[in-house]
Amino acid sequence: KNEVEQSPQNLTAQEGEFITINCSYSVGISALHWLQQHPGGGIVSLFMLSSGKKKHGRLIATINIQEKHSSLHITASHPRDSAVYICAVPFWGPDKLIFGTGTRLQVFP
Amino acid sequence: EAQVTQNPRYLITVTGKKLTVTCSQNMNHEYMSWYRQDPGLGLRQIYYSMNVEVTDKGDVPEGYKVSRKEKRNFPLILESPSPNQTSLYFCASSFMSSGIIDEQFFGPGTRLTVL
Image 1 (cartoon, helix red, strand yellow):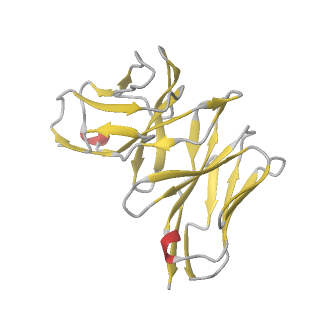
Image 2 (image 1 turned 120 degrees about the horizontal axis):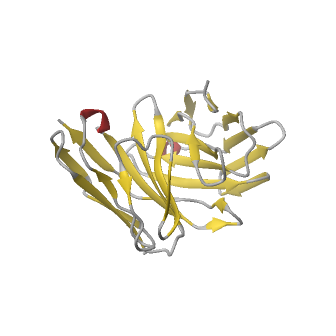
């Protein structure tokens, strides 16, 4: 059983569509991370959030601690958003991370 | 420029030949960590460090060693590499805010092949 589950595993969209990626976890946590891995392999941290909602440009992340669920939304998606999106949570303490297997997003013009 | 550097970026080696992958950050971060990424398994944490001389095991520490003698450096050591350690390795660093790992900065990755 995976402690961190992401859905969907793969997602294709047309440019301009609203995208939602989900992350569910089985342990109580203090914070959750969303990462983006570009096709070239580089990884960028998008958000760290412990409650509520955060927004950076067209990206919005929400978390519901009680329901053990987080969502990453992309508004007005663009082909440059094509990447793998990964969520990560602390496990057995605040300093050790486990990761979901990622959601591969492809946005077509 | 704030960054995490890893060297080498690519390495092909043979079973049993000791190697070190270096990681350095210039942001005065307390927290540093090593991850490996394998197809179908995603990212997994190998070792992490909360500060100088403080290191701890992650999910998959077997076959690896680390040290944190200086705040900026966190090398990953494979004393006797085996083919199952062929993988893509990432180093990352961050501040700790109230005991929580803050947003992490990742190095560019090291692709290791052990023959």
